[in-house]
Amino acid sequence: MAELLHQKVQLLEISPRNEKQRLDNYLLSRLKGVPKSRVYKLLRSGQVRVNKGRKKADYRLQLGDIVRIPPVRIIPSDNSKAPQYLINLVTQSIIFEDAFLVVLNKPAGIAVHSGSKLKFGVIELLRQARPNDEMLELVHRLDRDTSGCLVIAKSRDTLSQLHNHFREEGRSLEKIYRAIVLGRWQGAEKIIDLPLQKNNLRSGERIVTVDPTGKEARTLFIPLDYREKLSLL
Image (cartoon, rainbow, N blue to C red; front, top):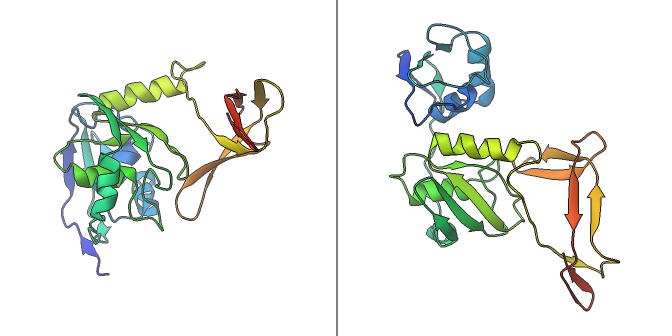
């Protein structure tokens, strides 16, 4: 596929929509078709400037900042249209919405975002269904094979606040999962205290596995019901 060259330097003023966004994520959203490695090289080399100065990738943009983006080569996307049945599946899964966020019951089998071998995830499907929405961003993730509530922010401020809640020590948000497992659970509730590690698959999907080098994690398992050789936890 032929490459295109943005001939001019871009000077972009940060609006409320992008306030508090990381600089690298802002650039990745603006430079569709530019490899990640190239974007980070532009940052490291100082070709990207904020208010005429160098900034690191994790710099949080402030309202009114002026971002300088140099001319770059872009591989145009094919702008593929997602199958309508997938778009309908996602939009029909919405269970709550207000001015700040959307909550949907993500179906199992659909990734939350696209990857190297996945053209469409929930966020891409929702954006195609709602092209007039100024912003739709994932607040957190769920594994592809996991169904459940997925929260999507409709503003940068909402995204930042919800991220803070997820990261708080002791957390003000609680995640509850229900799973059907093979076999009969022995005893009452149990706490599993094992470190967890995030891993990236070739498809771009992220999964979490038990790993001694991972982060500390404690999970409470409560048996809810039994059916023959199955247990609901």
